[in-house]
Length: 281
Image 1 (cartoon, rainbow, N blue to C red):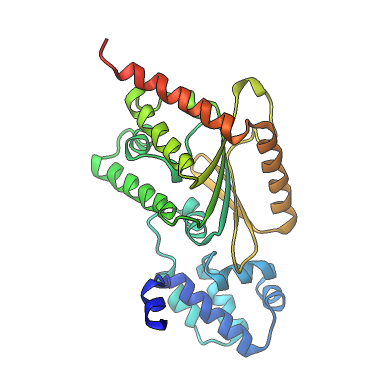
Image 2 (tube, helix red, strand yellow; image 1 turned 180 degrees about the horizontal axis):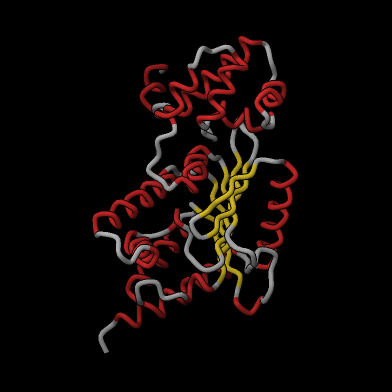
């Protein structure tokens, strides 16, 4: 039985291994997460997230940890390899945290969220963002996004709850064939109860997150995180008051949206409209 469990357990990421070493070194030193955080000028919850592998240990932080814990340069030597990522710097920590999350709540005002995109839809977006990139570069970006989406291969984890603006259904990314396929994929995920989706209709008017996308992540053994993304930039927040404020924002956005059943009907209606456009006249 133990052998069977071993085969099912996924291999630990380098960052999770370094995090476990951080916890071991801290406990050996006899200091709490809060006390260590004070020594290196971060919150105790930030230390907890590094130990859990949901946040990376940055090079300057590694030096401070080695000094505080007396680990003879261990973290400075090893954090570089642990920090390697296939994602852009502004998104790397969020993507890596996403892979460890037990729950994700996300609001996207005008696009289908990355975890729910099809390859063709993602390729159209990346081409729009980077019109002079080579096909190989675009394909690599699409592959990375599809790899993220494989989180949903697990039947239950993470719990994913998405609120989208109706603009995500109406913005004709790639034309009717690409949109019909993208919405068909979304409908399939909803119908097999793998994701909760709500849509804010355009007629709803102003809502609580007009400022842009928002993602909230919860974890089994680390404090929650909030991620806000702009054009070529992103910010991951762990301050409890800040996370609580963004959680309220998400709750208000969800309250302004259609119920899941009505949202599904709206998505299917848009999907059918696009599908009809692809039929020969």
